[in-house]
Structure formats: structure tokens, C-alpha cells
Image (tube, rainbow, N blue to C red; front, side, top):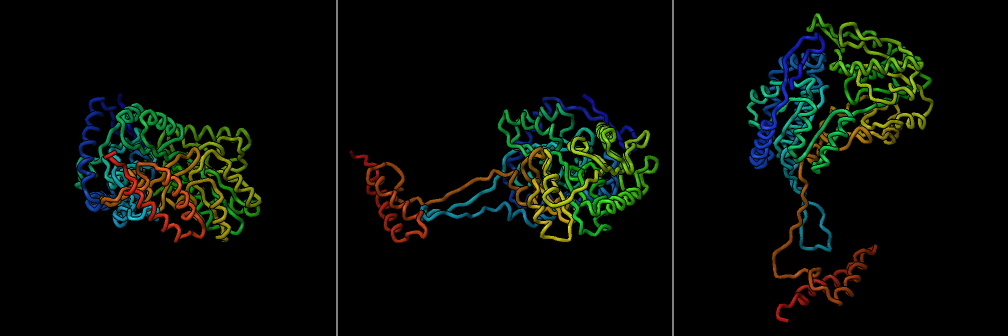
Length: 518
């Protein structure tokens, strides 16, 4: 099956990708499983050295990489640089300094009842990690999870979206960087290819995409009990209290709603503004939105703030949501109409939308900012939580105690205060959602641990002492053990009694051991 790849801004045909054969998929996984033994044998320091090569290459070749990303996504060149290339390099820089510590054996508490033993946690590889990525951030969504999986000692099989496959560019980056050959392999194709890859039974699946597709991935993985991380859609609310600086807040809201043409799972899709400042905030947001420069199909090098929409099917969904909303009484204050013959949807501000409209209840994934009123804190918390999604949110207020209180009450995985989606800019913070936004976390310590076999180890001496809890189970053991429990679990603990009974129990191990001469 052949799939056409086009430039969404100019509509120019770029190239075709073709789904791989079953034999090719078999070969990919054979290579991955064999190479994983070598990857797993590397020290974390050696894996870090490999990953740093990628960052070095991206920094030296940012211009060409940016241009290629733009050609397939339609985003602005600055967004390709800041949201994709910088993001990858920033995360690599973080793990360069922290991965060894994160993956180092961890000593943990051993209870006194197990005196003489030591406990630790080891973080080992899982095997082969399958990464299935979306079309909106093709470079970042490739290398972030792939790098995490590799650092944890896994081989990686990566399937990009057929909408923005960047075919050849990934290979060019890794080859040019001198990265370990075949440690990350790329498989191109559509949904059928993704399903076939799952049937190869990888040891871990990391999926980023829609909630609908996530449920399908989970169902397929469940047949083989493959652990899955699901980074799915969002309907992120922003909550704006009446004490904010309107100029700053409006600028932040406009950026967070329209960055990447709104094609981010954590962009603002519901903006709740306190009724006392609603009119002033709305006026400022509309004025700023109208000043944004749109991408130009006839001048790809011209300055632009907002690019085009990447996928035509997603554009149609946004148009349908706007149509339904206006038919039910919503008002479009600016934007709202796709530029004829293009996939450019001008940034759109909407008021008087309601929860009965898909624009408020369903993920939009486009450059649309609905503004809604609220009157008090309990009301806005309830409104923000009234969603099937739970990915991110933001709270805007000069009262930081209130902002943190509200942040704590929101049923989401990520909250920024006086900013939006900025948790993603800190590599130390885990990222993920709840409800229909999925489960699992990556980035931060969790990002490496989610790709690790977390193994518990307990170490005891090999001497002549027979453990008292081993066979045989005698009447005297049964009568003595409750005394030990009583002393140990009392508060305060009865240490003298515990020590006395404990020594008696220890002596029983050898005294009452199984007698082979009887």
C-alpha cells in the first residue's frame, strides 16, 4: 500500500511511502532483539555518550532539519526550531547530567524483622520498545521517547505517522551523528503497519495520539499483555482570575491557544475568564489575535506567527465544530473561515459557546480559542473538571496561594501557573494525563523508569542459620510468633520484648529444623 506525503502549505507532492512486508517486519524485530543484548550490556554512561551525538548533530544542522519539518507539517520555522529541535536537545542535556543517577541501583528500607538482609531496586531494560507517534510534533515525538527507551537499555522500533513521516531524515540524523546503528529502527506505513508491529510482541509500547486510536492500541496490546503508555488527547482549560495583569495574560493565552496552529494536545481549548474582566480580556485577546501573521503558500520564507493545519481531515473536523457551534448560538469574533484553496485556518476566537457544543466537549486540535465566563472559584473548578479529558491546564492569578489551591483541585496530569503548557519545557517534570487523556508518564525520572524493568532485590547471607519462618511449622513457633508481632507492631514498639522473642525465634530455626535422621 502506497501513501502520498504532501506539503500541507503548498499542496506540493513530496514523496510516497509504502507499507513494509511481513518479512521486513520480522527482520526489523530480529535485528532489534539481537542488538538489544548489546545495548543492555552498555553502561548508562556509554548510552548517554551515544545520545549526546544526536543533540550535537541537531545543533549543527538545525536549519536543514527545520526546513524539512516545516515542509511536512506546515508549522512555522521558529516552531520547528523551538518546539521540536530545542525540546529534543534540552531533554538530552538533562539526561546527560541525570540519567546515571536515575537508573542507579536504589537502596531501600529493610525492616528490622529482616535483620541481616539488604534491599535494593534495580532498573534494567525491558527489551524492545515500540514507539508509535503522531503527526503534530514528528521530531520531538520521535526522539524524546526513543532516547528514553534507549537510555534505559532497550532497542527501539519507531513508527511515525503516515501524515508526517519525515522519511529519510531520521536516518540521516542518526547516520550523520554516528549513533549506534539500528539501535533505533524506523518503520513507515499506516494503521495496518502499526497493528502488524504490535503483533510482533514488543516488550513495551509507547503511543501518542488520539483517544480513539489509543483504545485500539490498548486492545491489541492486551492480547499479548504488552505494557502500554498512552499519551492521548486533551481539552485543556485555562482559568483566569480577576486580579491578573490583562496585557501579559492575554499575550500568554493567545500564544497557548494558537501555537502550532492549535495542533497540540495541551493547547488551550477552553478559557474560563472571571466575569468582572471578561469584556476587557476578550477585547485584548481579539486585538492581539488579529495582529498575528499567517503562513503564506507563495512565500515559505516570509515571517509568520501561525502556520497551516497539517492534516486536511483535522481541518474538516475543526470547521464542522465551528459550524455546529455557530448554529447553536456561539459567536465568532475573529477568524473562523479557512482561506480558500489552503489548509490555513486563521486563529479564531469564539464566545457564548456551551457544553452542549462539540467545541467545548470534544477535542478540537486547531487554532480556536473559546472564551467562557465564570463567577467564583468553586464554579470554575467544577467547569474545568467537567470533561472526559484530563491532560493539562493553567491557572492565572497574582494570588499564588489561590492558584496552587485551584491547581491541586484540577483533575489533570499537568498544571502551569501564570503560563500554559510550560510543564513540558522542564525535562525534570513527568508528562501524562488521566481519564481519556491516557495513563503512564514519561520525561523526568519516570520517563526512564517507564521503559525499565523495575526489579526488587533482597540480599541475605549464605551461612548455617536456618530461617525461623522456614519448615517445619511447629506448635511452639505458632505460639511464639504472635508475641513477636505484638512487640513489633505496638506503638511505642516494645524493643526489649521484640529482641528477646526475636532471638528465641532465630534459635528455633536451627533447633527445630527438618531432621533428616528421623
